[in-house]
Image 1 (tube, rainbow, N blue to C red):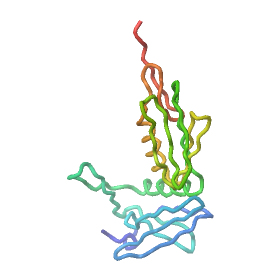
Image 2: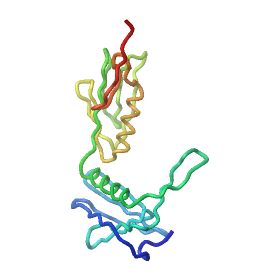
Image 3: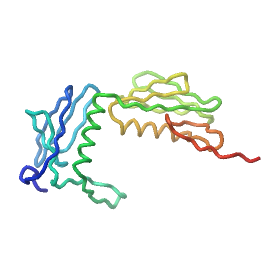
Image 4: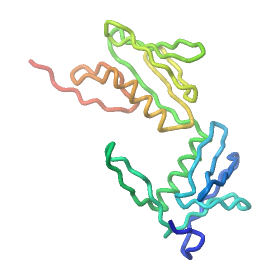
Length: 199
């Protein structure tokens, strides 16, 4: 891979917000940049063409530097996708927001007898009654905060949007909303198209 510093080109500047600490650890051919904020930490690889300007507290992104992201198509096949400076800038801004403002996702359950409840201990466990012959139990990761409101509402919050979205999708998969009455677990602002019943 070409060294971005050796290629004269236009650059994009991304300023680091106050309240976020930046550390850089050098490895063999690249470095790992770690961002630490009030809500957690995130790490980035300098292979993405991210150059840290420590005195100015900013990142310098080189326009024509080769950046690739490995995309897994299947277990046996994968290929590299070239990503632009705008994508890297959007990724950095998303990380800044996640480290300063907690990401939230609300879930609702509708149906007679359907209910959420939490069991606190060494590990927080979500208990769900969804009309099956048994209750469903899910262990909640320590980096995700969860709150139960009125037994029918859940609030997930944390610094990692990807983990929260993955957990919300996993919880929803146990009872996808019904197409006729809308019973099940649905996300906030999710629109459910109901079918007309037989007459």
